[in-house]
Image (cartoon, rainbow, N blue to C red; front, side, top):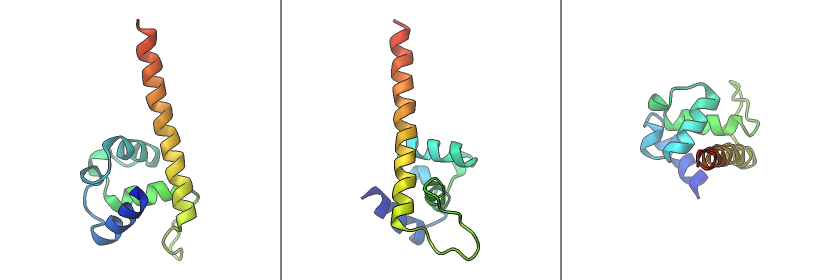
Length: 96
């Protein structure tokens, strides 16, 4: 559902700030991996950042990313996010 919402937003309002419509933790991961500043990342930049991690090349003649590519990118981002959360949890437990 989140990907469908993101696709619609990337087409209707591509220049809106991603952090206004996408969870902040996802925007931070995509921004870091894509090399864009998270504060100014747009919905379209986030959309393409997710797609690139699924194999989308974004060349001039390429059409929009397909669902399989987006799903692969989304799963990669989710795995990175889960790893960050686990590392934070383990770090907090080691401080006990």
